[in-house]
Length: 124
Image 1: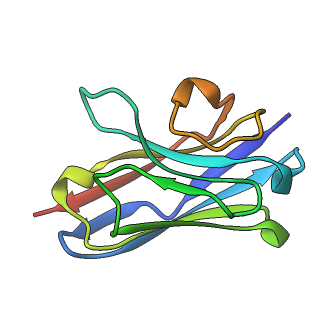
Image 2: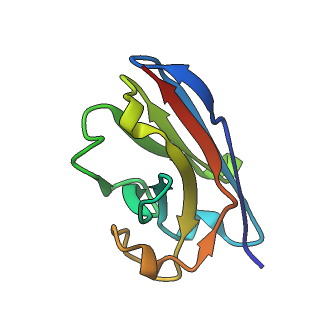
Image 3: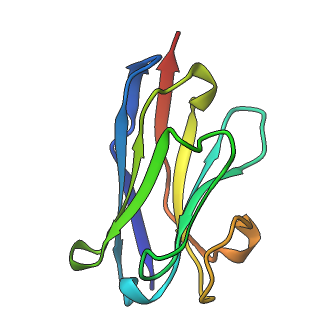
């Protein structure tokens, strides 16, 4: 059974930074792509970033490109999301996910395993 646990969320002022972590267990973490998604109240879950199994392919949503950085540490079974220049519209619950397929993508329906989420609140 795959388990994903996010951490690092919190309250930050606009322009600030946060680093989210997602610790994986129960699976050969290093073989599969990982993604970050977010969901704000009243909105659908949306794609944020994804990274391939070896880190060689990375995708970002246009809304976070240039501000967020996804990375992974195979030795620690952990994927990170470094968020900088945060805006109030980045406020959401952030989820990490992994999929059974080999390709990283931005389709939430392709990701089978999800964490519980961590709240990020950006004040203006």
